Image (cartoon, rainbow, N blue to C red; front, side, top):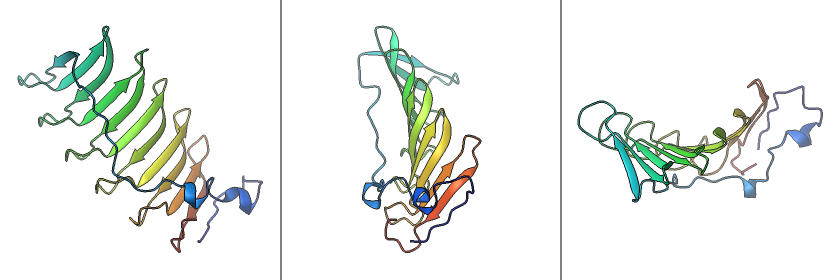
Length: 175
């Protein structure tokens, strides 16, 4: 595959600029995952816009939130699912950005800080972008840019968000 490096700050040479994992361990496109959220038990509801319809449902346990479903555009369908740990910190969020009823982004968190997410950027119902974060800042992005189900572009970022590495799999061999 074609390899393009964009950093003079990488002292390790070409070998260290290669993608951090081998092609066999790269993520592959899959249907966007979804976990059931409000499934029963203690449920609190809220009408945010005063139209008489429930816009938020929160499942609680012992008075603490476990999961919340939100209809962000008030069309009667859940657009955002959010899960909480025992301390009340967000641990997972699923978003339907284009309001078509399908999840487009699934993000995972530690102590309310995003650590990774997967996206469906072309809205076909399958993962095509995988991002990793450190201290809430994007550090690595992998993307299936040609819809063949495997990673075709890689990017790495420094703490200021500048691209330090970019590569493209021009011959579609997975590397």
